[in-house]
Image 1 (tube, rainbow, N blue to C red):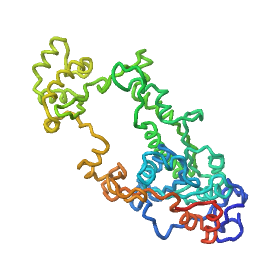
Image 2 (cartoon, one colour; image 1 turned 90 degrees about the horizontal axis):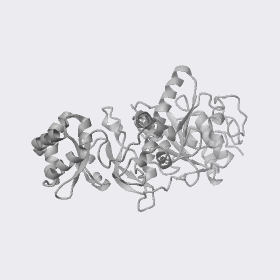
Image 3 (cartoon, rainbow, N blue to C red; image 1 turned 45 degrees about the vertical axis):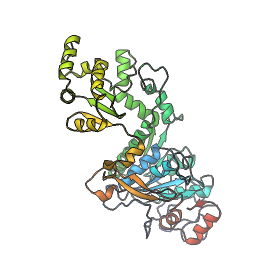
Image 4 (cartoon, one colour; image 1 turned 180 degrees about the horizontal axis):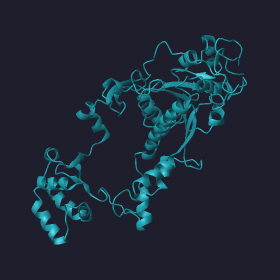
Length: 451
């Protein structure tokens, strides 16, 4: 049985006046007549306000899990796009991923889905697939954009482009050849864990930050915007693939890490908390604090010596070694000796005194803090990107809006994540044109779900 067309009791009947992309046959998941798009009368609180934002009018259907896809969608939503996250019944595999609030609500899921609309459909049924297909097909001139990391045939570019010829379809993959991967496996295969960690450490050290997922999500947003601009200029859609492994490989190449290994025939050693190729390291203070200090330039270095009163000892050390510490390469080469000299000064200072001294210089620095300390920091709470949201299942807490500052503070305010299926009925009614009786029938038969 097919999803009923709007205003018609007969299942599979085409919508009067709707586009006929490719003259599809009713009843096929990839060939359902798209419905005319109608704006919702009331915008639920969980929807990102779009008025005046650069991507207002853009609509993205996101069927993705974990970090990269959802981050790409949220990035677009925070810039004004309407992003509809589509999940299977009960939520996708990331719906309950840690960390969790005391209620069991995923802080991870809500963090990556702020400002989106949520629709739940049965991915295993033909009717559930048709709901998503029609949503893509009939989403207006700014729609027809799909962001996914799912490999379902009915969600593929080949299937969806038959009902939306100008489709923009971006699929995130593990590797360029289609084999699966996650951030941790990609990172392991690139060499980063073997240069991370203390000097002399023998085992690989994984990084906590999913750097490649984050970069992949941002690349995804950029790629979609590029394809959308192309479509506005030519009318043509585009099939895009983005491999997590390629994002990481490109970063390693662009930073010179691969060239260093190939051209110089060396493996970069572990340097602990030292900054490779320059002078930077963490220093402990007398009262147990710890601060990261970086002197990239000659001015930074001169200010650091003036602050610590170590100009004469540093000059004597340079003379004995035949070094020039105003040169970045020499500061790195003799980093251990210089760090030992500086640590002696830090040993005699409390953290507050170090803060004040460093603040009066050009030196780059920061105190090490825990995540909890970050949430309590005054300058973090005063940051115009940050705001307090009231998330069902969690309560009120500090959350970021868009990092992009276009001079409009209200445009950066964070918007809570939707409840799973919170907008299902609204989307079926306003966007697909279904009647209340038709929506009720789909709910009762488990084709769709609501919060």
